[in-house]
Length: 95
Image 1 (spheres, rainbow, N blue to C red):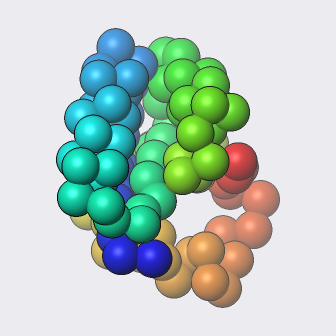
Image 2: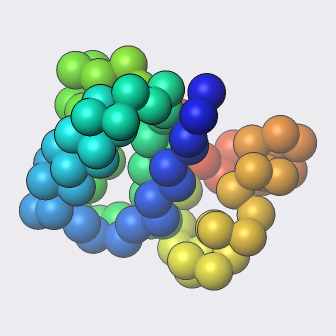
């Protein structure tokens, strides 16, 4: 895999489709192998449902949903460790 795009978000349901489409366009036009990891940091809108729909349509999309807000800097700094070690078992959902 060439690129992993990690996107922390909170209540971004309205912009996720456009962001996804732009990333896909750039990745495909450059022939990169890629994944898009949307990290929902406790959204209260329909962001998670949008992520689930994107993942159903595009196998490059993955999702991680935290059940409460941890803050962007915490997410960006620790998402790799949390996935690798499951240090917050039960604190998130994945697709």
